[in-house]
Image (cartoon, rainbow, N blue to C red; front, side, top):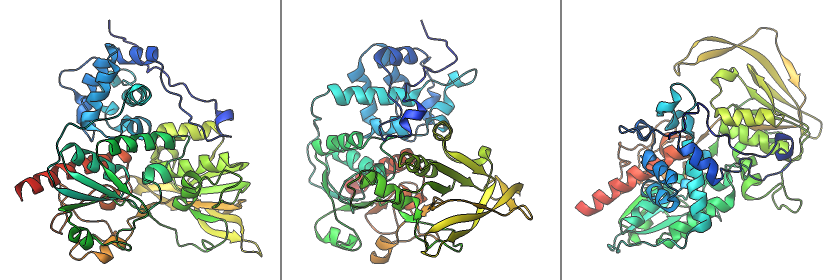
Length: 461
């Protein structure tokens, strides 16, 4: 009998007043009983609307049916046909606006918890499976993948499954891209990311770290070394600032720098070689998922007060609803309809406060959201000793500046067609390097599309 409950099975998690003091994963995952009960909420629709909402086209009803049958390895193999990173997607993919938004059960209640079930299956496989094996024989063709984030790893995995000799070049000393430097341990444990990467290595993907393409190695040199095609998935790691007075003070970080120090370099440890300022009062400027991550990290580092400063209202905030709720539960203060005007400093050039102005919403702008406008005579000073800017990122211009014939747009993003093909012969791109900062799953979808396009190109060449 189907489970006709209107609510999802709740996700077990650490209590807020405990988790805001540690970096252990917040969500604890379903038990088998919870997963089966949630799976029974799926109606197995023949027209599969949920699949249409998935950027990598997972056969969602099919893998959920396998959970109902307790064939968890079968469920994993269905996932594995479409995604190389199911344990990652199950944790950080915004299912509420993608697959779950299309779920029929969501019409009169909550949709099926597709993401939680994906996570459950991926975790079960990791704990119970043996090594991955690849049956496909090598076709002798080589592809270079620049960047080991979600776009690059997905592209590499699909190409390897197609028989291609794939080498991934990563600028940092650890593979994973934004999955390791950008997303905190309490949302995405790094052991999970490394386990997913290890699966790719087991099917033949080679990964070279500490290689900055555009500096230590150029795209042209990759072709000279025998690669038949190149995929650029280098992300968008160049931070933006507001260009207001005081941004050069000590204690002002970009969210990228702050999160990289915390996530990749373990700045929360006492012996950290790249520490961060353990401030008592922190302002995080921005309203996206990255802002939530930075604020929640600052809280865990011991800050007494952490403020999200966002110029629109809570309704316009782009962060996932779940992340906003978790931040509120953990004691993060939300200063909405508020915008910084200046960062104030003391005699030692350390942050001593932030001058802000209250905002109100006017007419909609080109994005469709109501434009924030300043209220007259509403300035005030927020007492903080650290500021984290989280107002967006753009692609690093290094690859563009060292690669002839590679077209980019006014934002520095690589221009491609719908199949990921760039203006340069045999060079493809996808993910944040093309779109600007977006979601992990959209980057994975782009990597998947580009892999298919590369295979078609090389087969017809």
